[in-house]
Every structure is written in structure tokens, then in C-alpha cells.
Image (cartoon, rainbow, N blue to C red; front, side, top):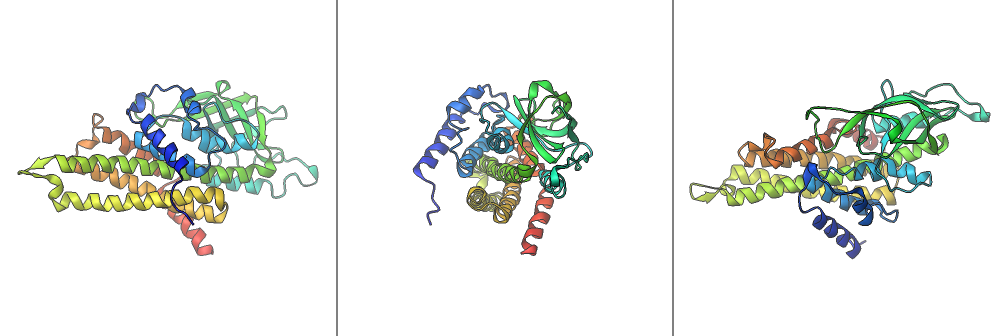
Length: 362
């Protein structure tokens, strides 16, 4: 078995690195059409190829809604026969409803247990805080929707008469309220919002029979791509710290000559490389070995990559003498992205507990 990247994969990675090299950051004014022109939305790209892009986007801390489009909305759009072209995202967490993607998958699976047998519709909302009316309109209040402010299309996990469905909504028809207004968002370049739907027209993408499987794939892909993104964040912070430790001198010698500086950076290097290997394995399993094997691989990569990103950013801040906590220091922004990644869809502790459950059940 060949574990090396192919020439095409290396070219895709290198092209992305060059494209993102100018560090436009949160003020990135790149038009969305460039993402499409570069081929980053192509249906032929597997999860490994998408992960190579995600790693470079993490390195650049790009504010692009690309991850929300291909990771969160993409599986449902493709399952519904729709092109992945415009910025899109997924609404799955509801007030008084499923909070995480794992809970959304569980709600979708349980909703089809007895519902619809014999063609009998149900009035139960299946625990999902958004209902489909008889005319196909949606009403509900979704929370923590990533990149809703950028979305043209909104995929909504809603309770239909036969179980949880995935439906397509025009994002211009909903009310979007960004969280953390006034610069208080955890990561302003990765905005999350509350989305209110009041009698909003929708189109069925995935019916209740298939919604659980599509949501499960969505979760695996989204978390695998975020693991790769976290590797990019960690690698960037470590590169900065290593360069500073080599260039900054005290008492006539680089500060990197001191064990108190060198050893933490060496430990971070080990974490980053381990996380990269696990992230690549996870993205491969999403396509090659879906199901339980992929779930274990994705959770393992998520834990390793999130911890590597936080550790690398914290070690870099320490190397810089603590200056990294200020807004003027670029490290501050990458540290905020690392924390966003560490808290998406549950904490690292939650991921460890779920992984332990999967392993102990074997």
C-alpha cells in the first residue's frame, strides 16, 4: 500500500498554498468565484483532497465559507442532486432540540424507527426544533450556524411527517443574527449565527429514509476537514515560534538554545506530525471505510489535531514572551481559531468519551 500523496494531490496542495500565501486574513476580499475557478468545489475531489485544502486554509486562517459549504452542506446538496456552487451551510442545532451533529444523527435515526410504517404520517417533532408544515414551509430557531452570514443556500435538518428530513432554503428568506457582536466572537473569521425561520419556503433534498446516513457522512466529513484545518493552524504557529526562537537572541545566543524554549517546541512538533498522520488517515477512511471504522478514525484525529493546535499556539505565545495574547499579534488570531476548532460540536473531552465508547463496545 502506498501512503504517499499522488502528484495530483501534491499539486493541489501546493497551488492552494501559493494562492493563500499573501495572508489577507480576516479582511480577505477574494471573490467566491475564485474558489470555484480553482476547482475546490469539484465533485471529483475526495475527502483526502479536500483535507489538503483544509490544511492550507487553516495555515492561512482563511475566513472563506468553503468548509461550511463542502463539509456541512455539501453531502446533502449532492445527495439531493444539487450542485455545490454557491456558499452554503447547514442548520442542525435547535433551541430545545439536537445540540451537536451526533445528536442530530441520533434524532434522525430514531425518527424513522416506527414513523411512516404503513404510510402513516406522524405529528411528533422527533426532538427537532424545526417543523415542516403541510405546504413545505419551515418554522424554527437554529443556533450556532457557521457562516450563515455568508450563505446563499441553507440546508436545514427539519422534522417532517415521516421523520427528520434535509431541506433546502434560500438564505435570503431567513433572519440571521451573528453571535458575539461588537468584536466579542471567539473567532471573527469563523462567524456563527442564530437563524430564525418563520414560514420559510423549502425544497426537499433528502427524505427521512436517507437523512440519518447523510447526516452521519456530514459529521464525519466536517470533523475530518476540521482536523486537517487544525493541523494547518498548529503548523503555522509552530513555524512562527521556531523562526522566532532561532532569530531572537539574548546574552549573545538565540533563545532557542535554551531547553526551556526548545523542548516545548520539540514536543509540539511531535504533536503536529502525529495529528497530521491521523488527520490524513481519517479523511481516507471517510471515503474508503465508512461507518464505525471512519467514526473511530475521525474522532481520534479530532482529539489529536485540536490538542496540537492549542498546544502549538500556546507554546508560540510563550516563545514570543507572552505577547501573543494581544490583537496586534497575528498569533492571537490563530489562537482564537484553535479554540473555535477545539469547541466545535462538543469539547475534546466529549470526543474522547465518544471514542472510548466506540472502542470499548468492540
